[in-house]
Image (cartoon, rainbow, N blue to C red; front, side):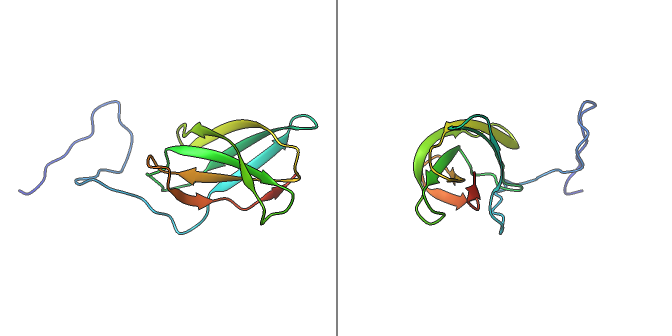
Length: 111
């Protein structure tokens, strides 16, 4: 026998990993934006199958190709929620690893 594994009673996952695993999805992060007030927005970001995201950064700007950092928050599970004060018409979310390297950026959303 090479491997014998069992799930603990409280576990309901069908996945088991014998070795360390790192996910690098081919798609971009998913972003949903909700306008809260004139300058306040709530952002919900997720990136299925990624394992390296340490922080999410909110970026905003006057055009989709001219976005600058506003704020950042630590990753919080599958979906991370963020609040930001955005005066520009476009926002996006950028994933960074623990070294600060950019892993991926969502598509910009027009407010």
